[in-house]
Amino acid sequence: MPLVAQVAVEKTGVTFDKLFSYSVPAALEDAVCRGVRVLVPFGKGNRLSQGMVFSVEEKADIGIKPVISVLDETPILNEEGFSIVEFMVDTTFCTYFDAVRCLIPSGLSVAAKARFSIAPGFYQDTIPNLPPDQQQLIRLMLKADGQRELDLLFTGPGSGSRILTAEKMVEEKILVSEMLLTRKVGDRIIRLVSIVPGVDPDGGGFTPKQREVLRVLQEHGALPEKEACYLAGVSESVVKNMVRKEILQETEKEVLRTPQPRVPMDASRILLSAKQQEVYEGISKLYRTEEANAALLFGVTGSGKTSIFIRLIEDVLSDGKQVILMVPEISLTPQMLAKFRGYFGDSVAVIHSSLSVGERLDENKRIRSGEARIVIGTRSCVFAPCSNLGLIIMDEEGEHSYKSDSSPRYHARDIAKLRCVQHKATLLLASATPSVESYYAARSGRYHLFTLKERFGTAELPDVRLIDMMQEEQNFNFSPISDQLGEALLQNYEKGQQSIILINRRGYSTFAVCLDCGEVVRCPNCSVSLTYHKANGYLMCHYCGYTRKLEEPCSSCGSSHLRTVGT
Image 1: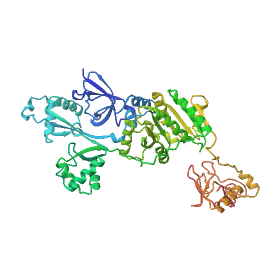
Image 2: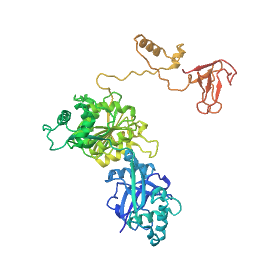
Image 3: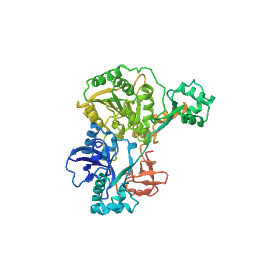
Image 4: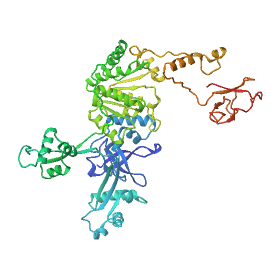
């Protein structure tokens, strides 16, 4: 019975997205399986498109298009990945392949073209013996010197039947198919030189320069060609000549691109306060249950949440498991990365959108192989290919940037919950300002709630004072700066220190008022107060765009005595 693959195809619309059926040619039966990418013809024009195989089954394949090529030697999407894809399709109304793309690094993308050629042993005088559809295809190819690429061959009327005809002709050895694939980004490969086994570096017959090269390689082992030349003080021609004489051998080695420089290791032990220790032990106890758990760490700014993270991560790593630590913004990643690399060294990987395509691909390789056991990054790192997750941490979990504003519109917290259920891991949400839904879940008992109400050590929370400006006016202070603020600014200035005043509004003054009748100048369209912009001298409405000059008389009493307030 023929095999039929159910494939999620890229660049489909939500309205007609589904799993499409493709026949599996006999030559590809061993390669096509769940989790590999394939190239398939799609649409009326048979555009060559990338797809992900969701299932393969024995089924009649009459009249359906075939799979053209397989892009992966082994599956790149596991069962956990498929469950995430199906969850995203169900909850975010995205296409199957949009969800698949979240789990696959873009560096694996390929540009592909299929080329069909007339087989070398085919004789043109046998064309009349072929069926009409095969005759038509052969004549079309002869006009193109015996070769046609798929996107040219299978376009226009009747293209659907021509692709089936071509595949049959390949099986009958009338045509030969060839797939031309180009990776979006290649692996970073360096060439190393080393001494050929059996060559005695101390033997005779070597020139002084050759002996120096052998000494360097004997001391350092395999080296890049240029580095070997530099250390030995010889030209590249000396090394190339030794390779040609089979004194040295060349090998290739993949070198992973590292997005961040190495930082010195910090071997000091993290010390926790009594309250931090209590919180750490509580969360650690949840982790030790080896069940899916969720906890909210509600701690004020500066309470030492990061120190608790480090102690928890030490526990998880000691069990041979992996950790994902999410931060809301790329700008926070370097400082967090430097701190954690100081403690955990090269076992830390980073994923965010500012990395190059090659760097993201190589970090993905490190995570998948288990070399990197801690993943730090923004929203997208929740999809990191960790095979043995023990803990997922979302720092500043209330930030809106954890929700994608483009398709698929997922929330990283929802994906993290799903992964924790599958791995029986712990989800730790941490923030000084948690989201309403997370805090409600913690208060209602669905999450475990831990609090840190004080800053770590001797640090204290800043003193906040709320000043009533109406009271200031009653004390004959009509300035926008209160007496207390003015005194504090002056003291800071005299100490040679700096001050920052934040104004949470657009415009120079928030409104204008008539000094005669007390009427606030309002927009005639929106009934809101107009904001004064000093740069152009206009009162402006920030809703509809209405403007008027400040010098115009009051619409209520006609007075020209207007005063701006609120700067």
